[in-house]
Length: 115
Image (tube, rainbow, N blue to C red; front, side, top):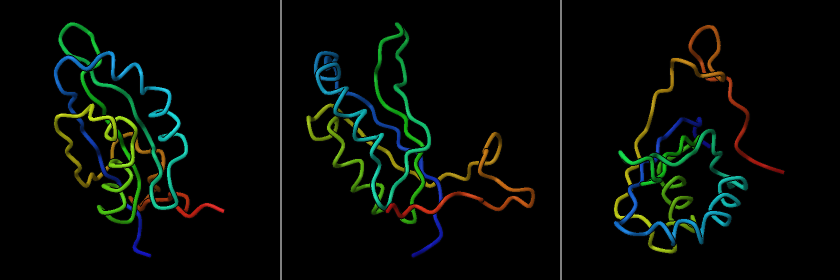
C-alpha cells in the first residue's frame, strides 16, 4: 500500500436544502466517525454562509490514494441524499498545526488499516 497522505474535501450544498441536511446529519456523522479501511477522517465540520447557516462541508482525511477518498465521499449519506451541488477533493500538504508531523517534517500518522 502506498504511503498515506492528506486530502481536503470541500463540498457545497445545493440551494434550499437545510431540511435535507438536518434529516441526514446523524447518518452523515456516523459515516464520518466510522471512516473506512482506507480513509481516516482527521477533521470535519460545516462551513457557513454569510448569515451563519451551514452551507457545505469541509473534511480533512488521510488516505493512500484519491480513489479511496472519492469512494468514501460518494458513500456519505449527504452525497447519497443529493445534498451537494459540488464536491472538490484535493491532495493537501498539512504543515502548520499538524500534530502528526515529526521533527524532520515526516508524517508520523497511524496506519489506516483497521482490525
